[in-house]
Length: 387
Image 1 (cartoon, rainbow, N blue to C red):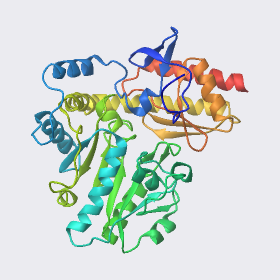
Image 2 (spheres, helix red, strand yellow):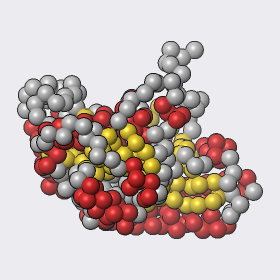
Image 3 (tube, rainbow, N blue to C red):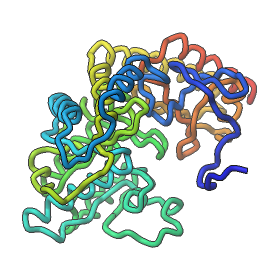
Image 4 (cartoon, helix red, strand yellow):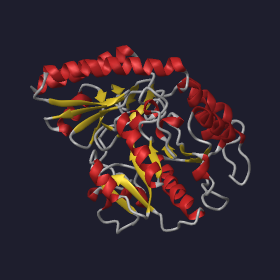
């Protein structure tokens, strides 16, 4: 009997080691891992460069309070600012924490300029922004919020319903917060033209634009951020998952205007920005921001998506749609999602569910073409067996 609480419906499998794109179970089986901790292990398991970064820093200092300057964090923040729209960064430990800070930053900004009633955040209904109290109510999911009372301050509109979005903006709206690519919500990409319209709308209404890139950021789309090709500059961006390559790191990126409200005492984190985490983050950033690396992600994802589409065309009664961008991929099914994922696992390919009957596929960003071919072979076999 496990002493762990039953808040996860865990599969009856555990792993003793991982290497690159593969996991090795305690019973000796080898699995192609296209979950990677849900887009967390962006450079695969046991990446030697990240292992070295952790090992080197662990011999120096693991943790100091944010009451003192942390050079490793200063270094990482400068790299992020140089690469992005942001002027400043607040480090956290997870995506949910980063979302919480994003909400606080938006509300605090308006408070700081004498508009304390502008606190409401407008989000897509049935989106996903984490599992803290504020984050679940931001997500607007009845299933997620059931039994947890009520946390106010959030309004919702349906994905793609621009008329509803505009009508929901009131004099008390502080920001619109959306995932650039909805992950848990079914791998739904917000088009570039829509991101541009959101920016224009926010400017017109004098409200802030928060783009949640916790899952789709840090090279996952083929660009450092999924919104980059739209040329839009958001006000606030929460990130996490891939930035630590498997080590817990979250962060909130802010432009100069909104960061002005975050004065000493407005937010803190015991572990956020610790030297060990920051050393890993610095190495991840150095690897992923390399243009050659990101071009390879684009090339591999194009190949993967093209061949998944061929499988869809081959089995039109099983696969409804191929979704996604970069290496954030979804297979929307006609057939039973749980059964499909189970059959993939039986054939040694690990995937994970998303809403709208979607199988989510999240290989490491440094995945090999031969590993993609293996995944395609398994997916084709499962479709053939189900047919």
